[in-house]
Length: 415
Image 1 (cartoon, rainbow, N blue to C red):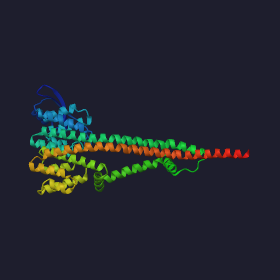
Image 2: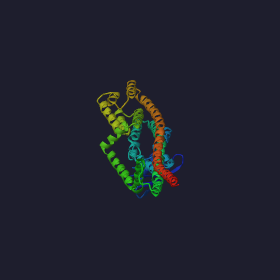
Image 3: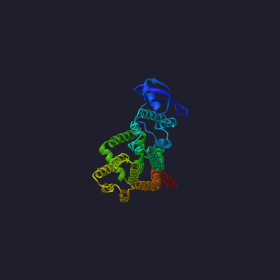
Image 4: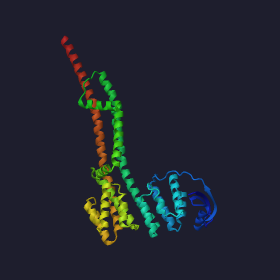
């Protein structure tokens, strides 16, 4: 289908330019006129190869702002095409700008907004498209976009808290490992050369172990790098398989310390997503299917899909979730009460708020617990290195003291 560049004038007299595809120039002119625009110029352009944006991921804060502004303009009575045109002009990210321009062209050509968004699955998730579609069908697109913006803001806040809590321990660990490697690769060899000059040939066990580690890092470091690369590549390949992904996700739920945290994060995301979908009018079966793809854990996702199958057969939501043993009794009871009272979506919002608060508390306690552990680790590592270095020094000093004592005694006997 040929592409055209056009210049139009809206009812306020403002001129704007755009591009669109149409079967011919007359059809495009009629389409623009039907939108209440005065067509000033239309000319066909050569088909340009579009930059691939289907695999581009847009940051959550950009999507949240996009939804919030989109909702405000629709609520003010601005047409869908005009909204997209304004959003395109306001967007700073050039890739996102091209994406919005293409979505605008699709909508101008008669496509629904949800189908136009579906062209970019890496940017707009099934949840995003499902909420937009529900808003279009129910005539409440501005409400769906508002809920979607709130959901994205909550999700972004949760991710930010987890990332912020993990930043400090990771930095401390990197510094600790760097200090140990620096001592072993730069300081220890100089002491070893000194010991050899003093004639020391036998070393205590801690010093021997440290020397072997130092020689490995200074002379055969490439084996360590190669081993690390092989491990990362093999791990990624394993996780991409069905068995590997399930095993890794099961480990994330049962891992010491971090397992409970990951479980709470998944429960918070489950409740927030399902509540948002139901509040927007998405049918329960479609909502459960969408939620299963957003919890980022195959084990919990499988439990949700099993519950969906049971719901289709007539069961209530809470019963299959309880049998999976992945959802705590409190969650099941609140979902059951919400289902019986006809207020499931606000009840799910309360569950999400509760588990997000639980995640905050868990992150605070985790950070407090990790800090002394890292300090003890660093103290042990540095202490071991210092002891390994000073043990041979003690032997040398003892030998020198004994030699001086023997020399002094021998001189007294001669007199």
